[in-house]
Image (cartoon, rainbow, N blue to C red; front, side, top):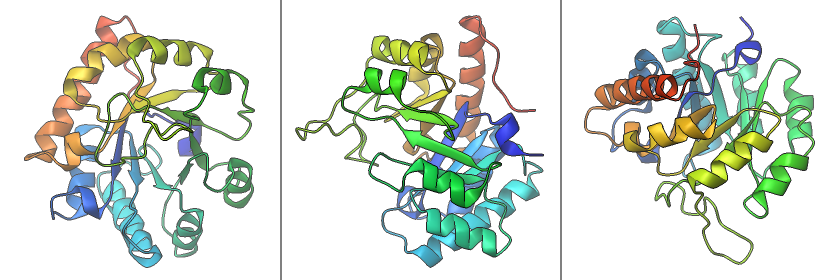
Length: 243
């Protein structure tokens, strides 16, 4: 199955070795995938290339063991080189997520091909105008936020003047209405935020600490997936859960 054709960003885990309270990244990935998370992003600002390649390979193995290859997307943050190296090793990694200052999306698409997943973080400055006017050719989804300030990525939402901009639900609603492609929202997202996010029209939520930092990641992940489904139903929307 081509995961891009059936891409589901409804429950999106971002994780790296610095986020797990000393536990293996694979334990967190397994807990999330087993609970119904539909997308996993490997992200680390401390791990080197070889460690990231190994983490990506291990995450792909977990996804395969859970019978979710081709259904639960696996992407790497920023590091196109890691994705290419992992693919060279035969790892089933689906694509890359990049920010505004990372490798351009057209380069990612050219290197990874038409079946790859390419996500892009929405521009902090003048976000609504950007979302409504940017050429989305080759982009599968926008990552938007932060909903709250977050310690796992202190520069998230950093504006041109150095201030951090958080996004209200009203702003997110306008962004989702304007975006020609799916939108996933993150930045300090926790269980109690999901009902409000479901009403904005967002296609999903992304998070780190609410699962990776939880005392019981499996229970936390299950509660989040269940709450998102409940919240979508309450908002009169489809569940958005991959089959």
